[in-house]
Length: 235
Image 1: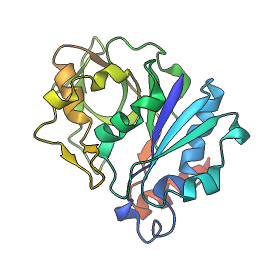
Image 2: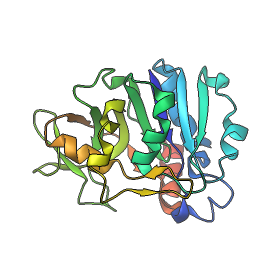
Image 3: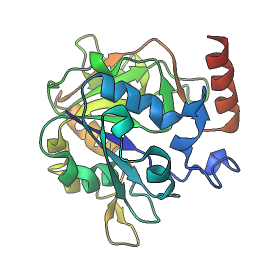
């Protein structure tokens, strides 16, 4: 199995910490956020990891090398100076991912979720990890029904954790679902979010998920980073 780590964000809400360091390389608990992911990926048998980059892209190979210290092969994919968003980033990485299911994780989160518990072959096009809505985004993203299907709406609204198993076939008809949301980056590559594709396939039951009740944080502000460091130091 391969993996894709989204690491192309600009980290604007984290400045000045991200003036010289991309957010996934900011340390939590004594090591970069992305390294927590790489260790888990290696432990579950992943060998090839695609890391999409944009802001301060050169810092990633300088810090992480080629991945051999974790038994991984890291493939850095520069999107240009303008990030391609989640959907465009996945589309740009598709040639490196192949056609087998792959694990996707956002590079700027921290969690105790066990990547190895995800299904290697998702039922449908994607299997998402969902969490209880955090205090700064209480509405939630999607709903998870009793059968394990992720829906646009429902009684149990949860937040997408930025972790999942995906099939690249999710991208096959992307133009049919993101016309009102898509654009082009200055380099001419499609730039669009993944959420409209997921919602379209939720309607026919092709997106499934699990609820993770453990620790998770989107390290989106200096305050959240400080809280995470305090929690890791305490435990």
